[in-house]
Image (tube, rainbow, N blue to C red):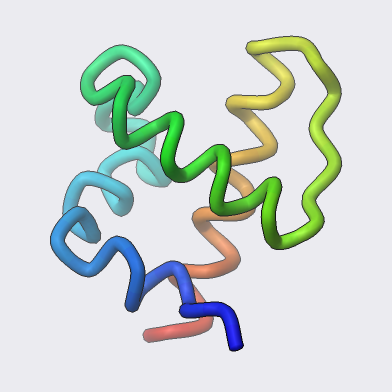
Length: 71
């Protein structure tokens, strides 16, 4: 079974929450974590657009959904 986003990225939850609140741009503030989150969602079956701006917005939406599930 695949680990949940919160389990997998538990050390980075505050930064991911800041990203959802638009307080930081994850792709610039922590590009390594952004790539890991991108791969995580791709592995979960999320289909990306191939456009960096659209893909970023999709990741923020997916983060918001995943983080809200665990509140």
